[in-house]
Picture (cartoon, rainbow, N blue to C red):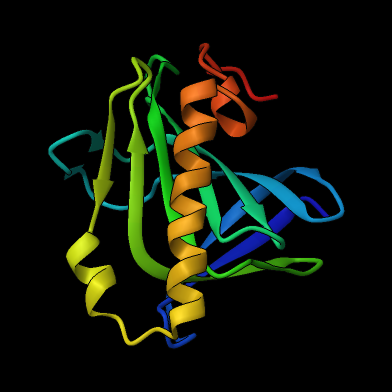
Length: 162
C-alpha cells in the first residue's frame, strides 16, 4: 500500500490534523513517508513553509519523537528538520497516529538549532514519566543532529522523488 494517512493528535489523543502521505520505506519500528505541504504559507521566524514544500517524515513506534525533513518546493533544497516530541507512533497498514506533546526542535542545514514551545510543554498535564521520556527524546534528537546521524544524515538536494 503506497497511500498512508497521517493523524496528528494532541496530548489527549484527540485528532487535530489529518493529511495524506506516500509510503517511502517501512521497517519493524519505523516508517518513512512523503507528504506535500498543502496549507497556506506560514512564516515561522526560523523558516517559512510554502504550499508544495516536500516533507520526508520519519515516524517511530519505539521513540518519543518524529522528524520531518523539509525541502523547498521549487529548488528541492533542504530547509531543515522539524522534530516533534510525541508519544511513540502507532503505525498501522494505512495509518500513522502520533500524540504531539507540544515540545519541538528545529535544525537548520547549517546546524543552528531551536527548541520551540517549551512553555506549552511545561503547561501540559503530563505524568512525570512522560515528561522524562519527552526530555530524553529531545536530548536524543540533539545528539543525533550534532552527529548528523539518523534522519539528520541527509543534507543534500532531494528534489527528485526517491
